[in-house]
Image 1: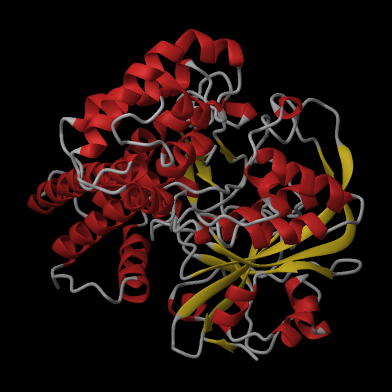
Image 2 (image 1 turned 180 degrees about the vertical axis):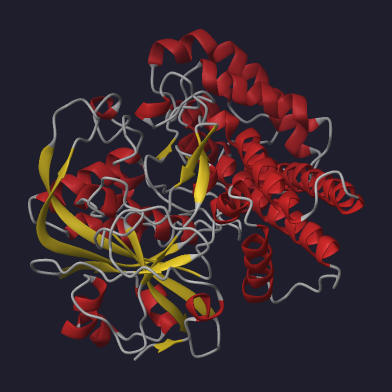
Length: 532
């Protein structure tokens, strides 16, 4: 059914302790652990695209054998479950050992073309890294992760994937806002899929423990297994330094995409940063509705706003510096090798800056419908975003409408005003800022006419960079509320809508609407916690 090739377990040292008890795991990268069975696993939804990639037919996905395995009630032939140890900087502070506290790997699968994927169950029970938790996940957080993983993939953003969403039939106790009001909620398990789930924190933990031998082994294993396309130098210092530069560039491209579509990760700790530059760990994420660089969906971050929308590029860079500091531990302090490694790591950080700047310029050119980015476009673009923020304008809708404004001489000001009016949340702010928008739109139309685009070409370009449908928080919350009552129809319809986020889908206009007023401050729509 699936061809397992569990290279991570085979080639890296494992924990000799086999009991599933919470503990500090040293001298090892993984611990053997089995999923904890649940009461009644039931498939709620699945990604047929991901199933096809793995070679699983629709009939296989519905089979009792597969559903039981995806719910933690059985093990497929060749599967060797385990959990991994990692550390991390959380909200800027070193947190020590973390690890897969509620995620259990089923193993590594090779598809028909030989591509490698790791399969991981999130919410399948406790592991040695569960840290006073039960290792379970609730339905609401599982729906959010399942839907957003696939939505991000179809948006063209580097991401981990989701194969399945399984209800467990059990109840899980959670205090959603950590306010002393726990509730029993329905449980669920998501099967996550990625070429690798290795995080920055996998390297940080061994560096923090001064286990340089294991750190070097993990670096080399990661390069060989997860970056086979790279032609890297044989010298271990040059090899690690060049590899770090590639990680930095991939991270930059990922974050630039987040900024393009208005995605806010919500908890960019170093243990939530993928070595492959994939969006990983969909917890208290969100989508900006009205443009607000300071918005964060994470209640834990509400005061500090460390992980708000506008700071994401800066935080990604900070996280890379922490990874670089860990890699520096493969050398002896103050040695010539250490100096050379430090220079290579700085080069890698420069590569992050260059890659982010290039990706951002390309994304902004596409968003605004410019044939190519010009340096002088920065003032126009910055003024535009400032106006959107001041006037409480919906970013997703604004750019879809901007593609429709007429650039021809004599086009009616009122007609263009009417097009953009659909993106405003407050009529009073629209009236206050209307003159400024008129002036900005005049500058914009002069600029786009210089590209000698016909209207249809500009609109087509912009539609490739500006989605019509995004996984707005209120939509996910509506799906969650229905599913909690046993109605999974909206989960599956949202999954289908998000398969074509850039295309107009007749009859599905409601999925492209502005956030309704009732959702502005509703739990699950604007306020989320790390348990969400």
